[in-house]
Length: 179
Image 1 (spheres, rainbow, N blue to C red):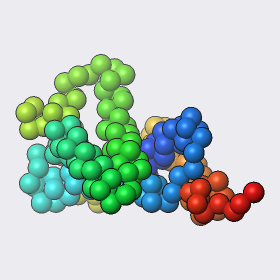
Image 2: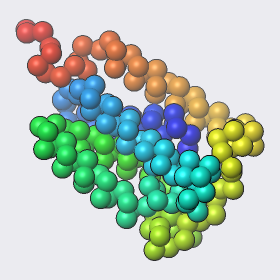
Image 3: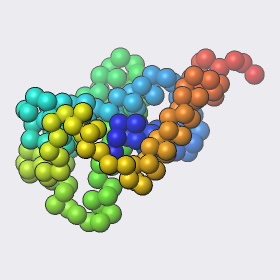
């Protein structure tokens, strides 16, 4: 998935949680969700594609051996500073990123491609050979899947922007007008 698709996918999952729980959400929670949806690629892609410290763009931060402690740490720190709601938002964003990266492999049961989830215990699947984002962009092919992902992401991000900046129910309860 591309960054905006990871964000839109995480946001849709977050919306489902909000609809079920029937509660308002703060902008800070949204920012925690955003951070969670992007962190694995922010860590892994530059360290693999530019600095060559990692074997793959899906290795360290895509590994559950890294993800679980990071999510726990964020939750503990957030709770320590009286922002316990940020931990679950970050965790959902992070989990949605990993889910977005594995859904095709799971659907077709290509388990050999899921080894990055336990890196460095298992070697990462050699799915990428890019040298940077520009190389990735130059080699990208416009496919039906890319068009659909981008369209869904555009709609999701537009809804997110409207809700983030305008929707009155989006404000935390303390900010709502009485009545």
